[in-house]
Amino acid sequence: MTSTTAPPAVAPTEGTGPGSGRFPWTVVLLTSLGIVGYVVATYAQAGLPLDGSRGGLAATYAERPLGIQLAFYVHIVTASVALLVGPFQFSAALRRRSRAVHRWTGRVYLAGVGLGSPAALVMSFVSSIAFDGFFGFGSLALLWAWTTWRAYRAIRGGDLPNHRAWMIRSFALTYAAVTLRAWLGVLILLQTLTADGPVDGAHVFDTAYAVLPFLAWLPNLVVAEFLIRRRGLPSYRITPA
Ligand code: HEM
Image (cartoon, rainbow, N blue to C red; front, side, top):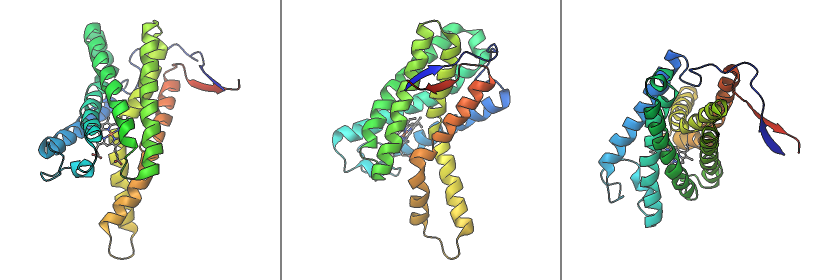
């Protein structure tokens, strides 16, 4: 099986991607900033050493070897940087105003994914939900690096439509940090509302979290592909060898 990209059905338009419409872009921007703010607030408090004594989720990693703890902190810092700068890359207005800023922010995004992805892969081996987390988050980490790499290769080759298409896919995966938490809230709420008796908080959380390693990002890719097609950018095709 080989992968190829089909030629655009219509000429790609300027201002494509999640940021093409001002309203969806603003939603993506604000939710991304919200999650970055949440991460900073949570983990700045937790601090080092990772004993969880000062709050936060760091306790999950307190008993882990130093390499895992390091991967954890590299991951949340660099992935947060990618989530922070990513939305700005889709603003046509910002791109028009300064190509140089777009290029430099793009490099920061690349560095964020370049470090955040291997760190996430390491963490997927010790995921709090074992195999489920390993396969779900592990695949996400690999696809995250791959889509970003393709976006970089495309722009180095002067292929703007493919660069935009791959950046939409890449950021759709970065945005999993937002959709994971949104799905978590929805699933917890649904279970609580439909429960017959008293709700066991830990059970409800575990049940919701179990589907998140895949649910956090698979629908994002579908939406990304929809946006890519709607913008007339090269869509992804799997063709027989
Ligand atoms: C898109 C690729 C990503 C992958 C593959 C990934 C992978 C992982 C994995 C495997 C864990 C451990 C989960 C567990 O123990 O069950 C984790 C936790 C975490 N990740 Fe990511 N992550 C990604 C993106 C991001 C982004 C963009 C952020 C930025 C906010 C982020 C922030 C965090 C934080 C704060 C945690 C700690 C647990 C929590 O707060 O829910 N991750 N990630």
